[in-house]
Length: 345
Image (cartoon, rainbow, N blue to C red; front, side):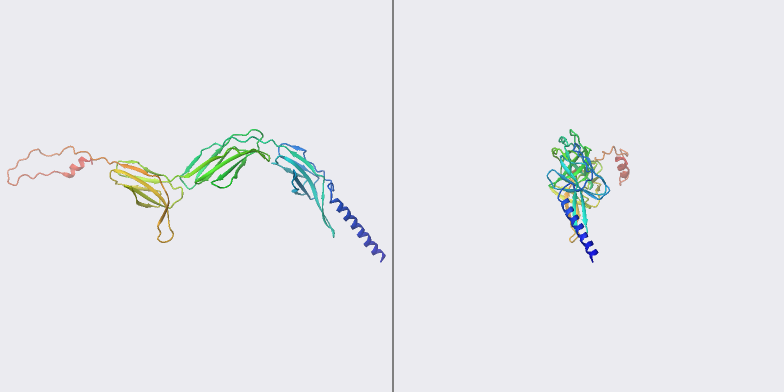
């Protein structure tokens, strides 16, 4: 039928025209006009790119000679950026157009350019703080660090930490110039800091090394005993559940007590100088169930000096006796009373 043939012919002509037009549009910039705008220069690393919103668009970004990447997608008409380092940034809007039976093509706006030139602050001075810590409980030590201000504009300081032979990890990123690091167990810790302005950062400061150790410390109260009684006590930085109390006999350490608590009381010890130490252990969960000790405390010396009792002042009783029988005289002394008197009882 002529009418149907004419419709078909017109439809395919229209499709062909659209295809030719869209193919040519996809080959160059300036396909769409969305009033894209960005500042030509910037010295802070923070700025906003704007365009006509209301339609779903892709905002693409290109830094220096790199490739285009998507920085935003949506229907808003602006995108704010911060922390940008020095460089030349280009922006363009991309629109994704799909036609029935023809596939999809990309349409682009003309690009705009922002040149970011952020002054780099000076390298921070040396990090201050203690170089060694020791701890007596399982909570470890808290390392305290501080550093002087850099010159120039600084938006943040980045502090990095390295544990033993590991890699550096950023543990602080703010404008504050101090940091505490709690819960640090035995090991070697290294720290370095740099100052940043937007995405541009200074060189790192000199490295500060901090050593942390567990304190397996034995003490006694008192250290000099005049009655033969004293108490040993010790720290428990590793969370041990079994302790061997040992006494030095000549050149040999002998276990005198096994404890599950961190103290041991002794009494009625004779005069002498005693050396003690504590071993930190755990019990094997299988036969022969022997304790395995991994750490040893310091040696603690206790001197016991119990003073000798005073000499009895005198013996009471008659100085002379007489008798007139062959059996003599029965003379008795109250020794119990004499003892109590001599010792002040």
